[in-house]
Image (cartoon, rainbow, N blue to C red; front, top):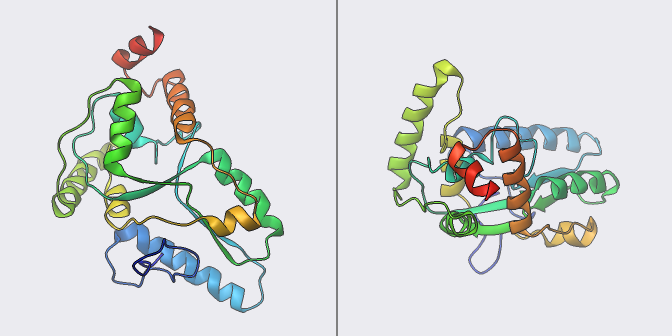
Length: 219
């Protein structure tokens, strides 16, 4: 989404972010997808776009959005950058997809919970008694660190705790209104703490979290 005017949350009426605006490869790919869908919609294809926030929940096998939670639980988040993120329970996102089959609109924001990254990290640290990382850096430094970390991880095809994709998403993030989806699709949002707990339990069960956190959980 493009930046919303001052005084309101971003919503479906805001056009896609213009090409060339900060946002990196991730935003460019999303824009290209929207362009292609829009072209087919103009030709008469009945298609609905769901603009979904970061999905949290079990079965994130590649540790995408859940990477920050994994890093926090393992006390291995090397740095972070401040900004807005939008988090959705993966089950809520799935229900929205099903509801969209009969939708009358063309685009719906499935934003879930709007939260600053600092607030999310503090919430995780307090809830699970893990250290709160102190290495807050600028967007420029975060981008350079993320690029370097991903270059080092690439030969092993490994994921990094703070990828460039996430840096870009947080740096360009903004609060989003999901009121249209709530009204027309009947979407409701799971409590964020419940989503975090379910995700953490799955990560523990499948060995994504280290020995220290597993021992604390057992106690």
